[in-house]
Amino acid sequence: MNKDKISYYFILILTFSAYILLTIPHIDTGNYPEFKFLIIGLAPIVLFILYKASKYIIDINIWLISLSAFCIYMFWGIYASPIPYSDFLDFYTHSVQLAINGDIKTLYDTKSPGTIVYYALFVALFGKSHYVFYIASSLIWALQIPLIYTILDNFKIEKNRKKFITLLYAFYPGTIFYATVISSESVFLFLLLLSLYYISKVYNDSLKSTDSIVFGLTMGVFFLTRSSALLFIATFFIYIIFKEYRNKKKLLLLFLSFSMIISMQLFLNIKYENKVSIATSPWGQYVFLNGTNYETKGQYSSSDLILAGFIGTNKVSMEQAQKNAITIAITRISNDPLKFIQFALTDKINSLWGTDTHNIRWSIGESPRKEEIRKQVLVGMGILDTVFFMIKVCGLLYLITILFNYKYYYKEHKNILNFIIIMVIPLLLLSVLHIFIEVQSRYHMPFMPFLIIITGMFIFEIDHILKYRIKRG
Image 1 (cartoon, rainbow, N blue to C red):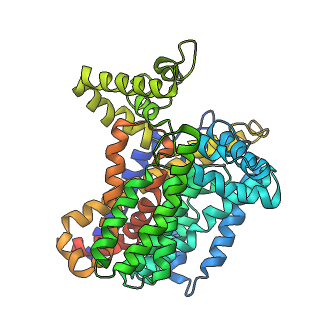
Image 2 (image 1 turned 135 degrees about the vertical axis):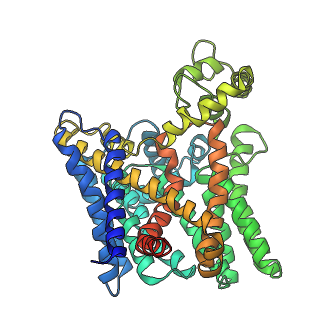
């Protein structure tokens, strides 16, 4: 064995040892410590199998992968039997009200009109059984898989690399466990990827006039799903204008179709609130207030609802409660700005990025089988947090690699660099926004497609990176 090979395997062993030492504190297996080392070893083995599979599968049928993922998502849903609660119960109730009673006002009352419309379509067609919602949610997660593959294809990512990334995205444990939860994240991420699909068509100059119409409609519904979509929409609009400024017809069709969807929210706000606004939720100020709560580490706070006058004995009008929320939040920040910055960069980051195990907790929170499947859940949580930890580390390492080898990537992999820049800008803006607003662990989901993609790229390139560095000494 020559010196280069010895160095190569030494670095791999050193890296794996560091991974084990860093991962152990993050894994909680309750009263079953014997699971810990099994889990730590299992996660990289699964990634290695997916990596090898992507190299040896000559031709991958992306729809077959989607179908396989859908079946796995449904299997967990049937096995765990999720019962909607909290925000998820609101989505269930509003979807049923819209589909069965035709109650349009429910679109005004909800936090996510786009989500309600999607699930209501399934209720109208197949009824209000929880299994209908499992199918609807699993389906929209599974449909993201061909979108990921096609986006990478349009950005001219090489075949084996995009196969591995697609497999990684399809079978990420967090998605498997969360896919049957009645959530806005499922619709949000589908629309984000659908928008990114049309951006990829803009990138390779294949966007047609009809595409512009569908793209505008997609971004309109995207905004109605969650207000933070505006950060992505603004970035995408700027990119389209930069690329298509000579084609005024496409730009006009895009803006008109987008405006048509937004006008629906304007109509709802005028009709039910007598207010000229396109805001999809009246709770933005309360979300800001939650984000400044030191005791809850920036997460949901029922006490803040009472404090601002949204509910309780001192309840005031919604407009006044909104003003109170802003005043209290600004006071908390201005009283000690340095303390707030420290809080935002420590406790809030930990609340947002500390774990991904809530994907399982939300899927079994009210399940009648909660105690029966306790051991399986602990193993699942351990595997999920291990893979999540690996994805965060690998994604960060890949960004650092690009940063220190910018000229190389600009010359040899400009397509990858363009993709990363398009995605990083809105995600950076979203990160800045989370400094001030409420955080929960599931709120990092808009980052996950990007993180999984760059993790796949890093793992796929690690052989080349190590060998290249060893050769250069």
